[in-house]
Length: 393
Image (cartoon, rainbow, N blue to C red; front, side, top):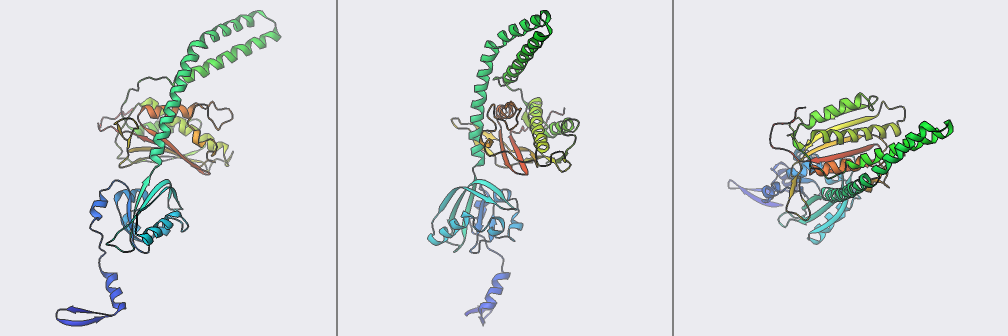
């Protein structure tokens, strides 16, 4: 027990009374809390029982909960107890040193984050407390992949130019000769002439599709992305997705995208079509009334990426996502999904998503995919335009 002097009266306070007083006393945060609140990366402070004492705004966005909600949680409520992050925390407490772990997965029904770098540090003025800095490396990896996609698209563009020059002219001659033969040969040979003509047309169509990878400047202006999504939704529901439910979860305050409307329609229509085909070919089969495509928009604070080899910093706060509840994308093709000629469809050319990646890259944006059985999401990170004059078409 300890003695406390209050208003000249000597009082004896026992352990039970002390705990009660501490329970009702307002929680005091470290003096550095105001500084941590201004840090653009997620920062949380855990007490000795791994309860959340503080989370800055970036951490609230990262975890998906406000600080008022997090006060009711421990870290174990968000992350399974066998996660390596708990070993890191115990090592920080035991050694009173800063420890970092890379490429961690924080996954539970409440939270799903991959490729996370966690740095834990002790606070000398807060014994038992641990300060965690959480850095999501997925955006950096997405940028690296985007640069790879862009290089691959340039390779396809070069190939298309060669094909256009070296293949199209001979193809025209072959097709013309097949037409002449078709008119002058017998019935049995006429079928062969038609086959030659049709195959020449098919090769020319493939070359035409590859020519869209050419390096052409993109004319951009302010575009209302919600009008683009509404247009895509109408097209989908009047055609290939008429049998599916399409839900919309939009942030109405989103500023305009700095982009090309027609190309953004092409990108999103391609993604929605892929989602519809995945649901139809997935576990629902012909019973697709449970199939759903979700279109989402959101504003992501602090999304600035430095492009390697330049002083340019991309501000990509606008996130547009297309999610479906199909079977997911196989792990064997997921790392190369945006490469040319990579497709999960038996009859696919493998150019659709490669073109999507190129268009997004031409807009200065990023595209990434997160897929598992029952949930596949393509996320576009796009630049915004401060001008309010959005394309209303």
